[in-house]
Length: 117
Length: 113
Image 1 (spheres, rainbow over the protein chains, first blue to last red):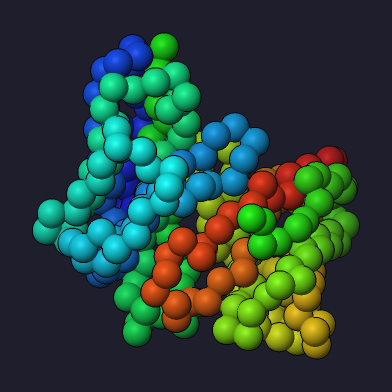
Image 2: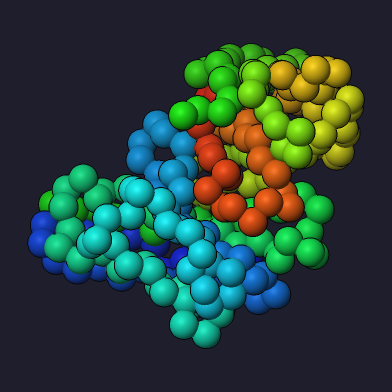
């Protein structure tokens, strides 16, 4: 399977605990995005990487959230001191570099669903 | 601030043609119109993209009038498997500002037998 993969698919944690999600993008894709999606809403942009550089962060990304893409390949999203309001689906997407794509099509993974008790 | 407006939900029947209209009154010159489809517990999937007039692929058609302030996604002869949420986006694919890729709440399409 050469699509975007995310791990874990489901995570249940207690309030105050830290959680980390991993995303493996399509191998030739330089751009990587994290989105958050709650029930009945569309995906909300969190952050974006071009190779290993984090180029943009949404104001939704509080200080408890941190994302990395150390080698320009896989990425991790960590949430510290989780709150019940963090419960959501966390989606990762990747796309080709601007120069290599006409459409800017995003390829999404199946998401990591977080439940904070 | 939402850049697009689309119906919250639509219902149709198998075999019918479904048209979902999206309003984007403030579309910029460099913006394209892109539609994604999302099934439950899955990430969105790109369906089609256009700039003006009509675009057709194996899945859908996209109609864009001359003023580009709206667009219509057309799904021919829908089946039960087309039940999903459909998102209309406007963005500039060659723009390096990723936050312009904004998803609204989408249109929840339900297909009945």
